[in-house]
Length: 321
Ligand SMILES: [Zn+2]
Image 1: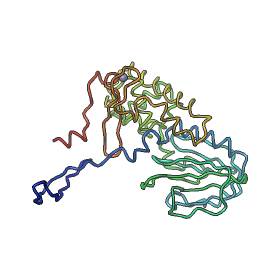
Image 2: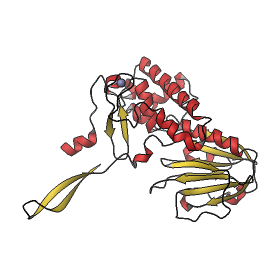
Image 3: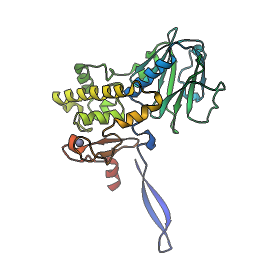
Image 4: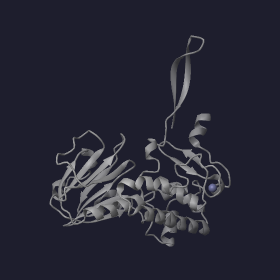
């Protein structure tokens, strides 16, 4: 996004000059988000870690710290009190805490959300409006977990429901990126004509892939992020399907077994192109390039993915025009 701002500035001649300055609003969000937004492998690993620690324990209390984080009111949060955690699960990028009696606390961590498990939680509820905690779940072990969200944009969303399908975002999910077969994947990709990067990350087409892993998948499949889905050949679709499976399976294998605290570093260490602008591609040595958008950016390798041609950065083109 580019805006023109007119600024008064003192020129070196000492007179006041009117200077039009074009300001580029930065795009990728706070730098700390790069490569650390939870996607399918991280949510899978968070669910596995939480199952290890929480299953078999009872919820003693749930503190809603950021009022807007809870999107449901019936049943009330107090309905979770006293219930045993019987399982955890994942729907696309949604995390599910399954309680006995068929109650589910389903959470979408969004871009800057995370889960922090603690062996001992202070008994007093956290003060609202202070710090990143959105919701705190106390267990009868004395431990429990915080669902947190960094930054000023608050998008983390929790739902207490009797069926995960009652969560609108879950009900709309396409097939899971790790569960779909080649035919289902090809059908999903052909469902919407568009740039493959956008279609791969559309949760209603295919569930679980976000900005970072789509960069990695397209690099593995040697496809331009701007390739148009309905022009992909069967061989390209096959390569893309294989890349989805390989990249996500490798990431899940690396991540599951890691505690929540070490997952972000694990994710970053496995990335080949995403968030690596200007660094050499490990396959061909060409420099990784970036295209920026209003609130995100993508990275790719020209030699591996676009026949050596850099893609137009429309944000920069707009500035030059
Ligand atoms: Zn390369």
